[in-house]
Length: 140
Image (cartoon, rainbow, N blue to C red; front, side, top):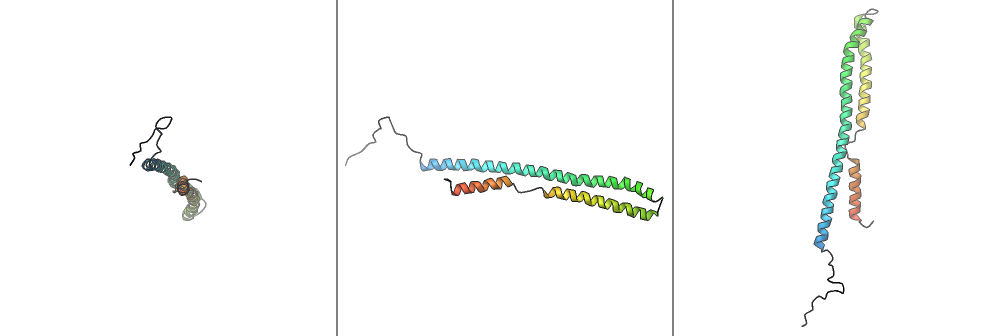
């Protein structure tokens, strides 16, 4: 039996390639970093959409409050003005109908704004799809 010992190369000891464990550790660390970045992106998108939803909700509230004040003061003035030329009951009915139309228009505007709000974090979903595709085919 002969014992063979490693012989150093002409330039000194040769460097070893990383082990499978080291490679897996590196991949795991990269995946953790990627996951954290995706979570941060999702949080940022949700905050952005929350801000837009808050503004739309503020418009609903503002429309309701303004509608209340307008209905209260202008309705009283209009009813009193119209009651000079017709019966007070008919004057009140006409004024109420006008403010019902105004309220409907304000509601529609708020509804349109609310429809532009997307609760789904679009960019995060897209990058997650890209990451999954890369994980399946890393050489592409």
